[in-house]
Structure formats: structure tokens, C-alpha cells
Amino acid sequence: MSQALHPMLNIAIKAARAAGAIINRASLDIERLTVISKSHNDFVTEVDKAAEDAIIGTILEAYPGHGILAEESGREHGARHSDYVWIIDPLDGTTNFIHGFPVYAVSIALTFRGQIQQAVVYDPSRNDLFYASKGKGAYMNDRRIRVSKRTRMLDSLIGTGFPFRKGDNFQRYMKMFEDVMVQCAGVRRPGAASLDLCYVAAGFYDAFFETGLSPWDVAAGALIITEAGGLVGNFTGEPDFLYQREILAGTPRIYGQMVKTLAPYTRVISDADAAAAAAAGGEEGEADPEDDALIQSLQEAEDAAQAAKAAAEPEKPKRTRITAAAKAAEVREGKDDAPF
Image 1 (cartoon, rainbow, N blue to C red):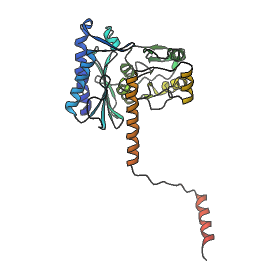
Image 2: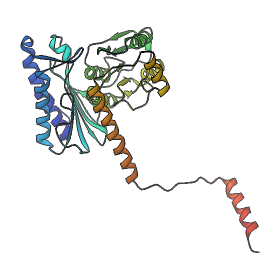
Image 3: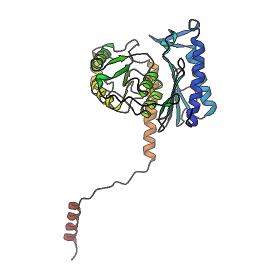
Image 4: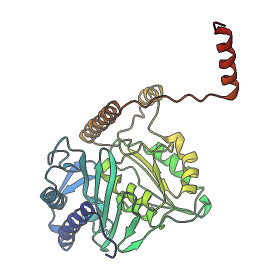
């Protein structure tokens, strides 16, 4: 690679390639894999676990004081209270992998105090490496990448992910899909969100949206998109997406148009709306309950960290703007109060 990379990014790349080698070896004889169903249409194999172990081992060997958040092992490894947390998906697209469909990836992101700083997404079947450091741009292999220049929805190719877990709200998604489909040139669903996000960064897609995703699905791809000049947020256009189970990403112009379409479908809804949905039997179940509990605890921990940081910072003195009229009035009042 021609450019000098951040040391922590180098470790992420080393870890991703080690996991990719394990995945590629296993792909030669998929029929021998032991597949476990975590829930309906949600699978894990010994390859997921072996790849995750390789990633965690590589990271903790270099940075033993860092924290780890991994899809299969949660927060079991690493330091629990470190400012540095690695967010890992060892095999994004497991269902594709066990069917021999070559669209899957390794996703690794590093956060510092809740902000994503380093990101790697590695596609082992094509040997494509997407990576970024905050403020340093985004790359595919050794080439700088940028989001597309398209500005019209009618010309745009949009990526998405279909609901697939038992209890998912398919009716809600089909309405959302229809609203997007009639406005664009086409919609694609390969089945690995981390790669979908990288495809937006590289200009292959013009936007991407999906619900039901976890932090390890989107953390790395989100930084790669923003470093490529794109925007990432939830369906209402706000930057709070990592723990919201919904994500929208795209070129600046297409992103704005997608927000108008997707905002009515956001999961960031009022308590009254949630109660109405539950009463109607339409409450969503887009995630495993254990994942929900973990993500909720992570959101609470991040909120607490942000509150502690704000409390530790000295309060800035308030600055009051004084207009000429106000100053003149102040002078007049001063004259009236003068003892002479």
C-alpha cells in the first residue's frame, strides 16, 4: 500500500486478512460445516467462531488494554471499561456463505469514546479490502474511493436488506420498498450490509437502507462512507444510527431525497405510536432478544460516558451580545442613577 497507515488500522487489516484466510479455506468444502441456527433464518458456523477468535487474538496481542464488542461473543473479551472498543463481525453474510453464494465479508471497526476512528471491511472471495481512518479518506485496495456524483433518484441504484427474522414487520418493509422502488432506477439486495455500505462509498450504489441491523453490521462501513464523502444516519436523517436498528447512507443529494421517503418508517417513534402498534399486533421483532439487551446496555454506557465527559469539561462563560441600542439605553440609565 502506497500511503502510510495508522498503526491501529494496520492491526485491523492484519486481523481481517487472518479471518479471511480461515473463511476461504472453509469455503472449499462447505458441506462439511456444522451450522447452528441462533433463531429463524439466523445462522452461525464454526467458521464464524474461528474467524472471530483469530481477529480478537490479533487485536489483543497488539492492544491488550482495549475493549472488544463481537457478534458471537459480545463483551466477553478485552477490557470492559476501555475508551477504545473494537466492534467486530467475523463473517457478515453467513447465510450467503453456507449456500456458497460469494457475497460475505469481515467487518472490523475501532471506536474511541464512542466515535469510530478506524474501519476495515474485507471481502475474502474477491480479495477486496475497503478501509478508512477518520480524516484520512477511504480506500478500496490501494485506490482512493468517492461516492457517486448522481443527484437524481430516477438515475440511482439503491441497496437494501430484506427482513428475515421471525417476527419482522414485513408489511412495513414492503410499503417502504414500494415507495423507494418507484422513485429509482433499481434496488439490489446481495445480503451483506457491511459490503453494501462499502459499495455506496465506492460509487457502485447511490444509497443504502436497512432495518434490524446491529452495531457490528454497520460500524466499519459507516466510517468508510463518510470518508468517501457520503452521509450516514437513521431514517430521519439524524446521525444517531449505531444503536437504532435502522440505517440510511448515500451521496449527499440522494441521501436528502431518501430521508423524505423513509422518515415515516423510522423506528424512532413516540410511545403512543409504539403502544398503538403493539395493540394492533404489529410490534416488530427485528432482532434477537439477547442482541437487544446487549445493544441497550451499550447505548446506556455510551450515554453515561458522554454525560461524564460533559460534566468533566469546565463550563464555558456565557457571552451576551450587546447591541448599540442596548448600550445607549444602559448609558441613559446610568446617567439617571448618577449622584450628581
